[in-house]
Amino acid sequence: MKKAWLTARSLVLRTASGIHFFLVGLIICVMGLIVDPKNNDPPQRFFFRNTVRLTGVKLEVRRSPGFDPKRTSIFICNHVNIFDPFVIYSAIPQLVRGFELESHFKLPIYGWMMGWFGNVAVPDAPTRESLEIMTQRAKAALDSGTSLIAFAEGSRTRTGYVKEFKKGIFNLAQKFGIPIVPMSIVGSYQFFQTGNWMLYPGKITVYLYDTIDTSNIKRGDLDALRQRVYDIVSAPVEDSMKDWKKP
Image (cartoon, rainbow, N blue to C red):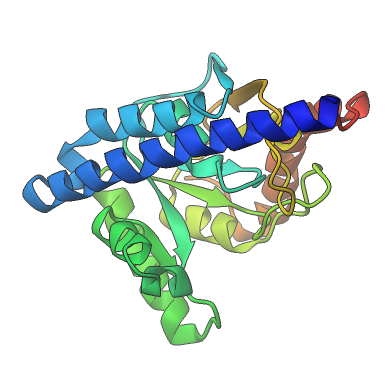
């Protein structure tokens, strides 16, 4: 009986969220043809927040005292599932875009949206030339006042725990002296696990930690910085997994 109820609830929530996504998403796309998406932030935030709400999630955002919401930064976050972009955009109080695999830009409609809204393409098969192009695109976005979100693990977790962070995004932050904001998404794995279509509505908490200045960090200090950010991001995620049991 419990499984039947969970299945029925997931179907209803997915349907409601899906209808909202396609209808409001279409309106946002049309608006994007008329108004520069960077100047069209309020309706985009409404769209993302409601997409999360309609899945049955209560979203809480906790900001550390040292978080600077006015400073263009690179947010480094754990990667849980396909709902991460909606959660992130709802939580970060400034204009933010993300890194997206280059192949995703070739997908019908979705790929056009990613490009038009200003996401930065990451090469699927990196070469020196393609990485340089990506770096310059990232710098252009940051120079224009657009913060960027990076999933330093490189892929979604399959266990709920945060995987080791890759070096690339830290190299980029150090190269341009862009501050880093560690960011944790907690409770999202309990809500939805990649590879399983069931939704388990509950609470997702997003932690925005102190902004870390990188202007004086040397290349030899990058491994220590990467480990420091990993420890900050992973700590509350690991705590949330200790006593959790899948319904």
